[in-house]
Image (tube, rainbow, N blue to C red):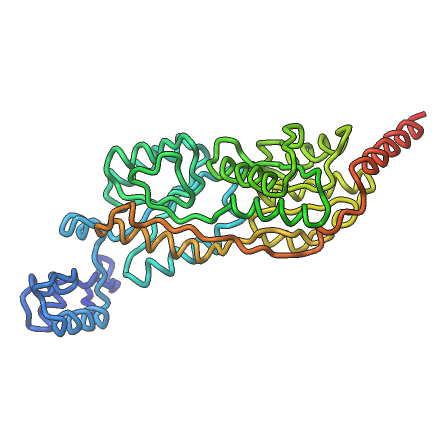
Length: 374
C-alpha cells in the first residue's frame, strides 16, 4: 500500500508512492525497477511484468516532470483548441476527445488540453507547453493553408500530427477524411437526381479543407459533364447565418440552382430558414447535401443528408499516429486517409422544379411581397 505521513494539523495525508518504495517491496535495486517500468530491453519480460504488477498494486504513478527529465518523455500529448463563437470545435469535441483519451490511456499516456480564443494565442500556448516539458507532441486540428503551428513545430523538430493535410507535406504526419471525395460523390448523386444547376457553399477560405472540398466539387462537375459557373459558388460560410445569407443570394439568381452542396453542416442549417421564407420545400423543390454528420442534422425538417465522420475513430487514430511518431517512426510513414460515410435522409431527391420554374416561383414571391407592402 502507498506510504502515508502525518500532516502538521494532525490529519493523515497520503504520500505518493515512489520507485524506491516499489524497489524495497520487491527487494530489487531502484535502477532495475526504473528500467523495468520504462521498458528497457536489458530487463527480462518476467521482471518487467513483476515490477509493473507491484507498481500498479501500490498505486505508483510517475511524476511527469521527473519522468520527462529522466527519459526525455512526458508521455503526454498536447491539444490546443481555438474556440470562439463563430467557429467552435464543440460539434466534434466530445467524441473526438473520447477517442484520443482512449488511445492514450491504453498506452499509459495522458492528454493535455487547453483552449484559446485566437490562433496567435494558440501558438503562444503551444510554445509554453513545450518550454515547460508538459507534452511530447501535438495534435493539430483544422489545418490552414498558411499554418504557423506547423511552421514552428517543423522548425523546432517537435512531433505533431495533423487532423487534415497541409499544402507542404514535408515532415507532416496526418489522419484525414477525404472531403474532396465526398463533395465529388455529392455532385454526382445530385446529377443522378436530375439536377444540373448545383451550387457550392464552402467553409472558411483559410482552412485547407475548403480548398480540398472545392476541388472535389469541381471534379464532380467535370465527371458529370456539367459546366462550371462561378456565380453558383459562395465562400466563408461557417455559421448558420452565413449559410442563410449565401443561399438567399443564390436563390434570387436569375438562373437559380435547384441543388445546394454545403462544405459544413453548420452553414447548411441556414438554408432551412431561407427556404421557409420563400415557401420552398427542401427535399422536394430544392435538394440539399452537406458534410460533417453533426447530430443536429438528424433533427432538421426534413432531416439533412450529410457525409458523416467517425470522430471517436479520428481521435484514436490521431493519438496512435502521434505516439508512433514520438517513438521514432518517420512522419512520411504515418499518413492515413479514409472516406466519409454518406447518411441518406430526406433533404435531397429527384428534381421537381427546373431552374426556370424556380426563378418564376421566386419572382412570384417577390411580387407577393410588393403587393403586401402596397
